[in-house]
Length: 333
Length: 197
Image 1: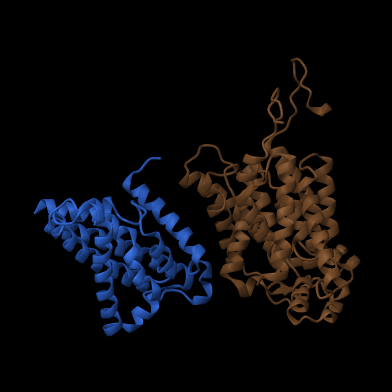
Image 2: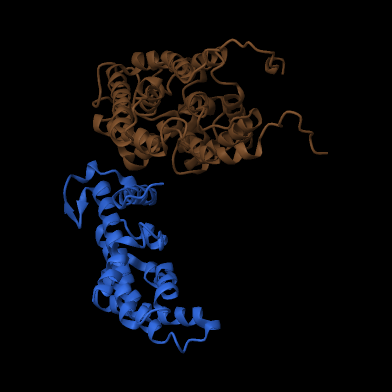
């Protein structure tokens, strides 16, 4: 609590601003972006580039022509983050027109209909992804193998670790899980290991964790949401693995799919996550729980994005019940 | 005559049951997966609404106040049964595609709402015009919603292909698409009507 003591004026300005935090997140995304170029090459560059440009364009066009606001918000960095995260959530062989529809839904439906940054109840990038996943299920669930640097839509596709886990649960045969790559390869996303199929941003856990460390160091986010999500998933997945070996081991569950990407970059979105530490832990635990439920018992192999969207809807409720005590208020006995 | 035309216009535009009164959301969201489904649901509701408005306004003076809701429901249910038998006999494919939503017209709040707020206070001719206005307004809204969803979702309007189905966003045919489309259409209608929040 020592940080919260307010001294007498004059006060120094902390230089904190929307732009500063948003560009901090963009810097934190750079390691994962570089890794995606190294693993998916041209495909990743086209998908992420189109997504960022389209998000910026729709943000500019809607602000100018529909909302008729004087001040343009494209330089505050939030549209760039939405663009990068939307790109990270897509397979690297996605046709350009689908990416543009995704960006229109993310910025237009997910953000600007509610009045722009700060008013959106759901994470815009996830709204875009969920829309595309439901609308174009075939294109959104074929994943190119990493390491095909020169190919875009013609890349060879392969099974993701999540699809292998789903197969094991469906067939009830634990030996299917032997096809899973080992955890170190999943952490580094080693394309040489003969796997690495997945969304652009999810293949390399180490790069995402690097981003997390940067954001914690710069105090852009606090540890509560990522740690509570990952901890919950580890505990529940561990118990399920012990009870029945057809469920994958907890380390593989954490390193597979979009779990790290979601826990670090998408669940921690300021606008759509609870404000207090207590609220953030409730939110994180619920996301972890829902993810495991959707992954193991739902029809989709990946549940992270839906879990975050569901909990986004609960954020106002969590905020209502987790108000910090006002100064001078006495706790009820 | 002007009075009747005003009542008609009122139902079609100023008090459009879907975009302005926001009534009857269950059939609006559930049956508008295509333009033809929306249109048939709208016309079916329109038929029941005209008949029930007429009968309710004719018997308004002899209906005991304590039991007026059960009386209305019985009248509405009678016409819905008539309608369902007609549909099953002459257009069985429409009956099959609308399914449970035809019997559910009985509990459609637009019909009971108009009975309560209009037919029980006005004469039979006015009530018929109100039924036509509101009913056509409902049919228009459902057709528009169904048309938008069918177009965006499958690239067709009334089964005529506009662009290849592969480019359609399947989401619009599924339930979430109904909510998104309804929200945007209501916003556009409010903009046209000049509503300021």
